[in-house]
Image (tube, rainbow, N blue to C red):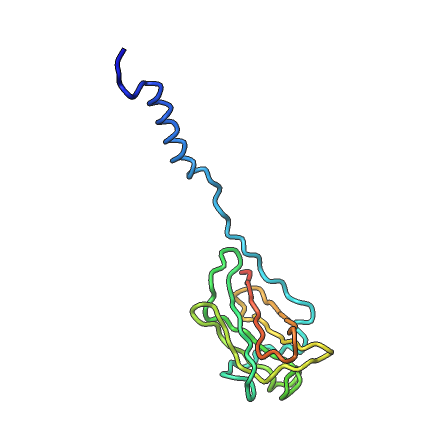
Length: 162
């Protein structure tokens, strides 16, 4: 009998365990990137004005509308996308042309536009936002603010390609 530390059996068991552990990473299911698209909100398109101009600010400012725009599925940020914003503010009603403006997303897919303070319309302080550039499906949002005293509102878009 030999005093070798490895027998054919121990070699096969150890080798099999190493192969199984190493190969198991090949069989782990891939994590699917499945970020769902944002659905349009009821009432979001109220007083929408196609082609609202891109502006640096709406009115006198003091309130910030911010958010992100990403692609459905992989969640990649979408730079250069046009987001239209309008609301009932201290300077006008949401149907007034001067209460509308648009901005473009930056390299990170983020947007930010200053506007007058949003005030309650129909009992709720809310804003309107639209993605309407045409490369993806149009989405209208109508987020409601927790308080009329808030100085900002955040909205996120996840867009579905046509």
